Length: 314
View 1 (cartoon, rainbow, N blue to C red):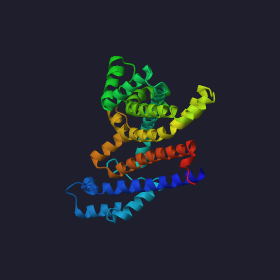
View 2: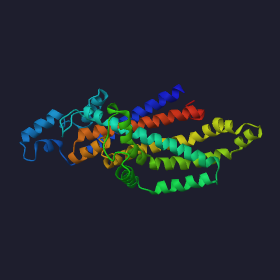
View 3: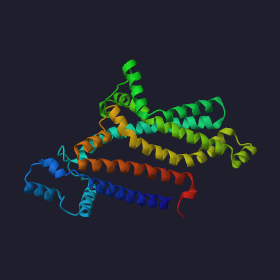
View 4: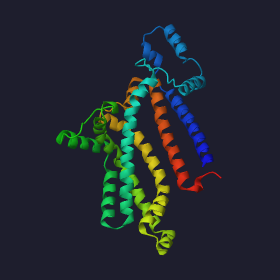
């Protein structure tokens, strides 16, 4: 297991470097000159050259990337071209909002998806299976942003039970913080719940019909023990990678929910950075999001190593 941890950590660091390099060099393809954007179209050419030299933009791209990535390792993400604030401080203000949303949406998707999948898979063809299958098909067909708007219309406008927009920090009150995340978390978890539930249902049916389960039943093993010790563990091996993929999709789609529910997270920061051509802020935000996805993949790999010894390096 130690070799697996070291190997996956090394691959995660390499993935982070490659992701940072891809983001940096793709952004360099933009036709927008940040120096001209900062000083204006009619600025003195000497001032333009002086600012480029001051920011290090006159150096080769490879040296610029190495300097920028070395700054990230030191905790220096640069300075925003638009607000002239440290990018790290801006990310620190927005990150708790996005993390809270991802924890809420991810937890709901995993819990509801696994519960629905196991309930349907344990009795295939029954009324529970039919209800879950129909609900999953409907959830996959509904666009997430439309579902978010309908949730806001019902619970915020009609019933007035939950806020329709805005975010309350955890320090300002746990109950208010939770209320501000209920609707966006539900909307964000919709698609992930459906995918996890459908895949879990199929895996549970396959495991229950496998020969080794029939042999365990023939020895008189109690059904509860069969489910806890054998079905759950063997079903989670193929389901865990699906959970990892869905969590990555939740991270990618969280920016849509942040715009719908007016949450000041990383997604809205990246959209604003694209509009204002604030490249340092955009690069820093994308690297943070990439790091979150890489951490999820690392957790999935380690979880698979714990569940299935065959994936551990020999």
